Length: 117
Image (cartoon, rainbow, N blue to C red):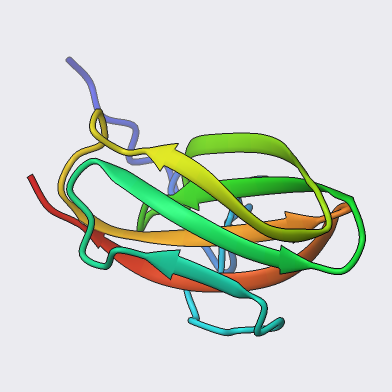
């Protein structure tokens, strides 16, 4: 084994860049639209996303873990009125998750939920 001790062979790093994942998520809890309820919290098996809407819309529910990885995604066609979307979390590890609800590709709700075993 040899070590190169030639002057200039070693240098310090002045700057580096870390790229964010495409699925990166800000975990702030924010309600953008009050017609969405997420329950129960904490959840053991099935999380219910209750969405009340005045127009039919394509709805997507995304669940992210605390590192920003997408762990569940459910698509549903919400009709006029109250819609209940079931999200089965029985196969997800215990921990804290972020739930994002999209209506017609627009983010309408963000909340944190605690998953228990």
